[in-house]
Image 1 (cartoon, helix red, strand yellow):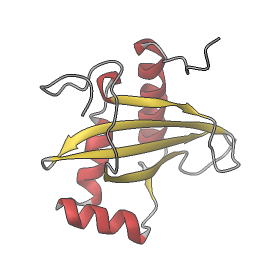
Image 2: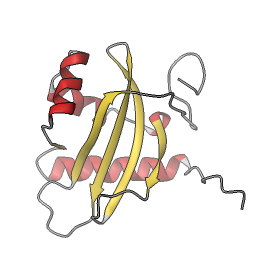
Image 3: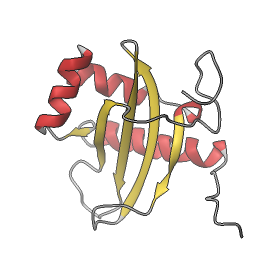
Length: 133
């Protein structure tokens, strides 16, 4: 092995997104924890929490950047990163799907802010100009 992380195939990414969206629909929506940084990012982008939720529900494997990540804040589950152009800006989106039995809202939006560095889209970004944005 050369140490390069393996990129999941589109089917694996689609499977995660399907599980995430299903968990959100069945459990009262995406848990968007109203932390100051997230709310400031939404305001800066001119978006509401509802618009952020709609952006997440519109994600597909083309918006995949990395994951699953080993980082899970000490809780069992999956963490994946996506990027999407929203309001003329590239937005970094980190999702967490908890696998804790009985979790009230297992689909969580961990990060939603302007990208702070270039993002790579191994399966295409759906944007003109190539895979790197």
